[in-house]
Image 1 (cartoon, rainbow, N blue to C red):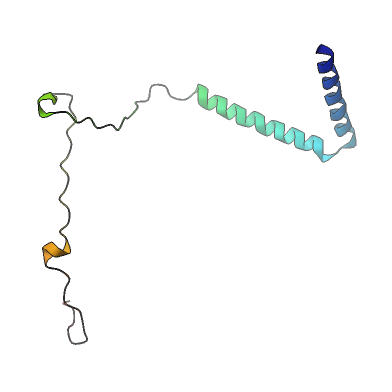
Image 2: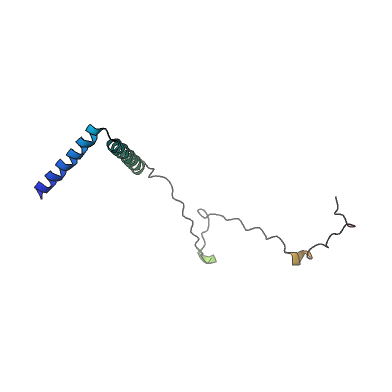
Length: 107
């Protein structure tokens, strides 16, 4: 097992030496992708290590309590009542009469 890893490392080093001596684009692309992966890893590590731990978490859960279980006094959040919906066409009397050339809309 140990000798297999030594041969693998020697093969990798030989390939790298071949790329460097020939001046091929393979070595340059290897450097480019290695640097890109290192930068991405560094940004990820920075985000994990330095994120704020003390920020408040907002939970959007509604708990439906019965009226006798509601909080009295301080600590309860007061919600606004919902606005009434706009009336429907049936409630307002339907659509206006169709227009023709004689009837002009009021200005």
